[in-house]
Picture 1 (cartoon, rainbow, N blue to C red):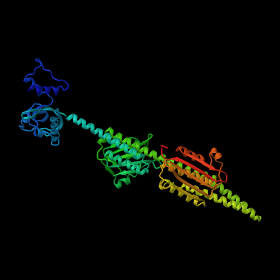
Picture 2: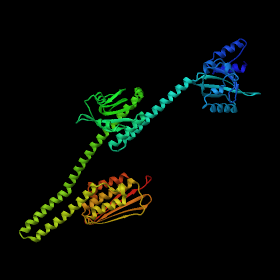
Picture 3: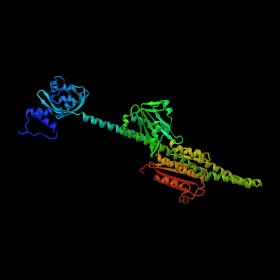
Picture 4: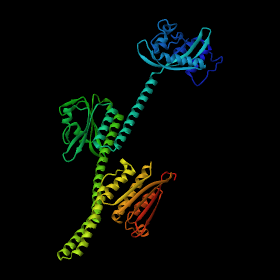
Length: 529
């Protein structure tokens, strides 16, 4: 064995220290053979050919490959190249070939078949040396199976954790989607089953009034079983009821639900704020992987997310009921403040006119009937205004110009008020600007009907330049004292000013008694302005 091989052996055993030789440390041939044969692996020398022909193999080959050194040397019984897994041979060849051209050591990890038809991973490190017969490879092969298995296990754990986190993120997204509750729960159940690699599952929600668990979502259940599980007695002995009663997860290897014996059952409580609301159930062929803490943590987190969905749906329902009640109260106040008062005045005028007519004071009675007509017409205008406000806004569906025209036709037009709308061609505005102009116009038109008693109104929207948009609203009503109204915050002027100020615009009023009103609003179209 030459010094090159001994140096290579030293590098393999002590990779961070070079060997220094002196007369007292010189190795005899017996020492070298003893060292080679006790290394935890195979020292070799061979050709860089298709068969990886080996000229020398240490005795570690028996433990690593199941072949004696003499069986591998010169391909006597087996060519080392044939032991390399067929799927790895090309990659090994390319790595060694690349290392030779780059004049660097090579390092390969590949699968090796043994004499006992077993497969193990090995780490092959060495260097090529050019000789008269071609390139000689001198290297060391060690068992790498345990490390590769550990890395594969680690990668699998990372992949599982990524899969679980991805499932949770998707479930959170689904839970935040403002879709109907039944749709949301069904989508969550399908995503849970995919993440858990299970085909059949159910979600039951507890109903306090009937003390039963109602089936609100299921996937993969036979129809007959779905009907039987449609309602589960919350006080019964059913597995689903047990999860509800105990408030903790349950795993059964042999599950019996009514007359249906499935292979295995996993039940997860659906809870929020430490209150059990329902049960998530999975029916599977095997439960061994659910005994892992990571799998159960995923399902418990899903149970909490579903509980949050139920809680959010409950809060939304409460908010909707409160909104309906608030809108009813607002409508009642509006009716009392406008239409009811007008109708009360109509009854008073009508009664006074009737009394005068009975005394044959017809001329005086006619004045009261004029008041009845005017007050009734005003009440009709305000009623139409209230009805229009109760309808959904057409702004999002039809755009600013058509929404304003719809308002003018539905309210002012039917009230007999002459109206005109002028909008610049190709008017394209940001959504927030359109919304502001629409609500400002509505506020001004409402004032014209309720307070100014106008018979004519006009709206004009223009773009004097690229940075601004202008809104002009005019009526021929009875007008008002602009300073007094602005100071008192009446006639909806405060709402208009706040909307304009929020967008960095300006608003001016021109009005006087019996002279009508003109409102000019300027809003910046771009953020830069």
